[in-house]
Length: 361
Image (tube, rainbow, N blue to C red; front, side):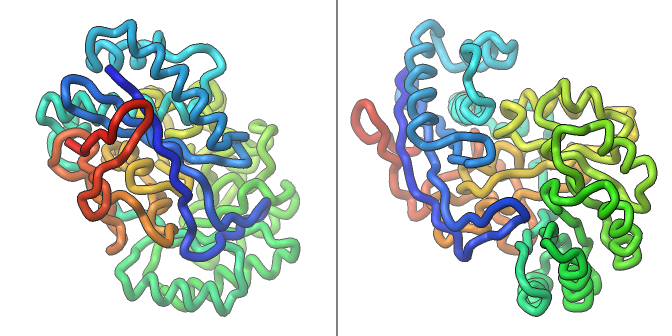
């Protein structure tokens, strides 16, 4: 097996402001693994919050590529990764997730089967995805919501956490008026105190908000669990639910956990979390970072297991270099094509280093 990387700049169609930052672009490091003429692809994106940059991601991918030499084929490498015997200590979960995605893509192509079938799901998964509305004025949020509702988006996620709490309330009220039939999710990204959350949640419940993500600052899961117990609407842990052990502490104590493959370590890590949650009152949400279709695709193959789906990272981009999972009509769907079912937009090949350009197979 040979591995190489290709780094691209992903520009957002417009800056996305949340409570802790504003983002207009991020770097994506795309990994290609080739074996016997077939190539699989995965992607990890830079993130200030997770302390990942393109240089560091590429360095980790280089180390992973060297480690592939000890496996006779991608199937053996994927099994080692599934058994947590592949990545070295200190490998960021986002890198592990991208390596797993490339191996799943490669193994699926070699078997002529889509990834969801490799994971035990027969029919191609499809789900309505949330579409994010950032921290902006109520009038702009309303205009955005009106346009999204006209495009048949059924789920809207509204960012919160403004300095003035009334601004958050007015933004949600404006979105509700503009899209009266939409399901609404709320995400303060940990910006509220316990007192502010207790005061605001009944007001958002009255506006028909379906659930709230990570209302409190991460690092105090007991406080989040206590808030969930008293909350008039479901509370979903995000930044407080990074990996399996975090979820184990919160299972049955919050209403949902937001699983992002880049933070938990990939598809099989997410499946372990889903298994842990099975039978508890805590439901699964699938989330993402802003990324290309290539980066979002692995999670799309899991949407049949989720109560809430927020996989719109590729829809935030000015230009997505990959295609294959849809979303423009409010629905993401895994295709029946082998592997991840994605391809470079326009049919172009993806160049990677070391070695020549490896064509999409």
